[in-house]
Image 1 (spheres, rainbow, N blue to C red):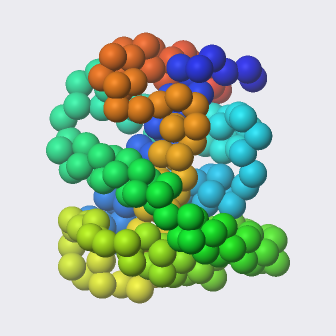
Image 2: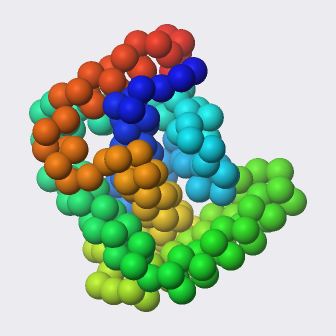
Length: 209
């Protein structure tokens, strides 16, 4: 499908929202649906050709699109707002660190090779590699983003790796948002248009999405 600018922006925001949603679920319950985070990892490892739909699949971003509508029209969850703002902040800082960007690019290439080998982007080894990459790059820029949740879930190594990997997925979404003309003023002055675009995308999806 050919997306309008607002639809493309809505999809990039959906990547961020879906990443945050998965992070919150893992932190609070120790689990989240593979079908929700697998497309985020695939998109992180994939090549962007100007279409977020082609990279992630709009249907697979349906949970994120719903969150876009909810948060833009009637924001209720302070934690979601805080995580999203932090992800945008981290992305802006990252763009000023060319050496860190290069390290991330190299790490993504290695993770891509792993995903190809296992024929599964959501394989435990891939998640661990992406999580380690976040720790060795973004975390080192400081200060670290504090994740709220149950301590037993946050201390679990698998959960910690997945949360870090999802944070990197969210930062990728923020980068795509910026590449498509998104910025602070866009969210302030175009929020209703973007929410409407997200609604249009959802209405165009199969009913089971």
